[in-house]
Length: 68
Image (cartoon, rainbow, N blue to C red; front, side, top):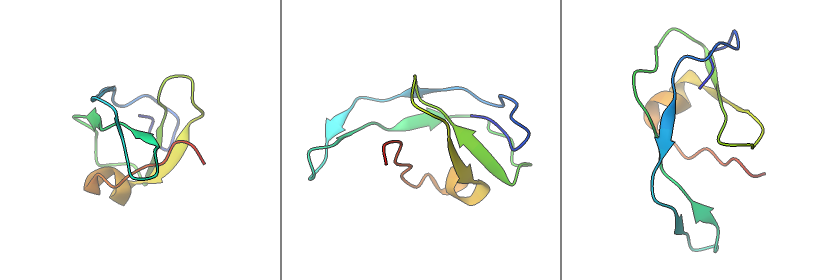
């Protein structure tokens, strides 16, 4: 996870994947100790492009769809 300045502020792990109702594979992502002082964050999983999310989304644990 990157802060709004582009600095790495946390790393995490992927949980076990499962297929959802639309036959898409979903993975829970767990990132601990993310500082709360950035307006937005960038999330990058593996080789996928970085996805920018708001601080609120980072705090609530809402789904972040990496493939759009």
